[in-house]
Structure formats: structure tokens, C-alpha cells
Length: 66
Length: 254
Image (cartoon, rainbow over all chains, first blue to last red; front, top):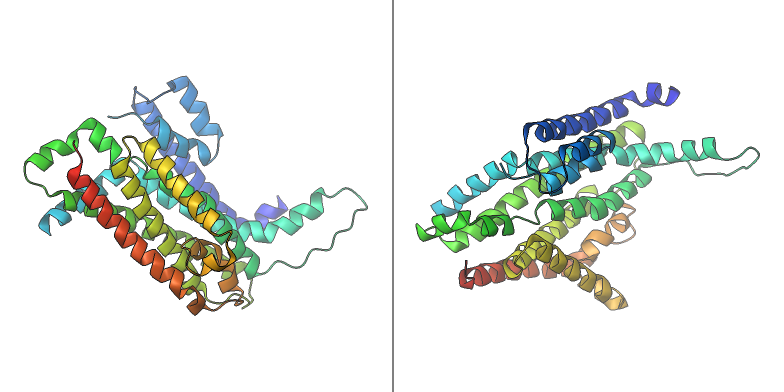
């Protein structure tokens, strides 16, 4: 925790950005039924547990057309 | 000209609705934060995870390390993400057939290509600026030294290289049928440039130097003017690629 106390001005925006990206992707996963590949049960853990890469992969490869 | 403006606006709206703008800005923001942080924390982490009794002496990190991280991350991951995000810029519309209506109603094909390029350029510029300003701010915050020089000219080189890559991508998209074909062609172009760099004299003219010599600029070991040939070649190549993209797209059967 010492590291966090010392560097919070940097770590806090980093965490906020990661969480924002995750929430945007999660919202999109839950709102849509069709994905280019994979299922909802596949994309939810990918988006939630793989930081940064997961949401990006979803938006680039997995997002279906509206 | 009015065609161009309308199509550019449509492209930007599309990039916003398909989350491309969001991805680019957030990813480059995250890169921007990570660079100074990695530079600062790496020595501390190494010390913590070293087994007892092992002594290593690491030099105190400086702003140079932070900028080294910046140019390593943006030239690799940053450009890869950019190319991936924009890989379907033309192919998705061609496969869905949404362009055909507009083109038969009289939208010029030049406006399509130029509008797409301008939209990609805007997003790339905004993203790189985000990463640059973030890294700059935190580097000043964490490392109060003035070892780093030529910050603007070195980031300008990287920006220009990105513009060149986007022109390559757009030209590949007009040639290839799918987004994967466009990615493959762009990758092949990058490999060709890397092979060219084997010849020691080629770096002076090679666009790749604009993404590889940035740290030499920051540490002041080369002059900005020594890259002027590479800059000239890159600008000329980008314009030629755009012209080629327009010509190919005009002859393409949709």
C-alpha cells in the first residue's frame, strides 16, 4: 500500500481509465445479442478480468453490427 | 469540397458511435500514464523482488527513461492498436454495401477517400497529443531534471510516421478485399521498411527512422536536421499513397 500512497496522483487516473473502458465494454456486451464470434458467457469474463486488452479486443474483434 | 466536409462529418460520427474514438483516446491516455510510472517504479520493483543478498546498483531513473518508455510503447503497441482500430475503415462499408447508395447519388469517390483519411488523421493526432501531454505532465511531476531535449521535434517525427502508416493502411484497404488483407499489406510494408534499414546508409531516407531515432533526438545525440531527408521522403510517400488510393478506388468495382 505504500506505493499507492506515494503515487496515487498517477495510479488513480490509471485505474479510473481502466474501469471506464471496462464498464463501456460491459454495457455494450449486455445490451447486444449478436457478436461477430463468441457468446455472452465468453465476452463478460474477457471484458471484466483482462484489463485494457479485454475491452479493446471486444470492441475491435467481437462487437457485432447493430 | 462540400462533399468532403459532409463525408468527413459522417466518418467522425461513425468513429464515435463504433467506440473507435473512445478506444484510441483511452488507450493512448493509459499509455501516457504508464510511461513515467514504469520508469519510476522499475528500479524499486527490481529491488523488492531480488533474492536476499543480491546487490544490484541501478542508476537513479530520469526523465530520459520516461521518454524511452513513451517511444517504445507508442511505436509498438500504440501503432498496432491504431492500425487494428482502423483496419476495417473501408472494408466494412464495402461489404455492407452502404457506400453504393451514396456513390450512385453523386458523392465523389475522391471525397470518400479524403474524408476517411482526414477522420483517421484527426483521431490519430488527438490520441497522440493525449499520450504526449499525459507523459509530459507526469514526467515533469516525477522527474525534475532537464536532461530531455527536442521533445516537440521528436514527437513530430513519430506523428508523421503515424500519418504515413495511415496512408499505407488506406491504400492497402483499396487494394485488398477484406480488413485482414489490408492489415497483411500494411504489415508487409512495415517489414519491407525494416529490411531496408539493414543497409546502414538507408536510415537517412527511410520513413522508419522517424519512429526509431526519437530517443537519439531526446538525448540530443543527433540533430533534427539529419532527419530532413527521411521527413521529405515520408511526406512524398504519404501523398503518393493517397493519390494511389484515390486512383485505385475510382477504378474499383463495388
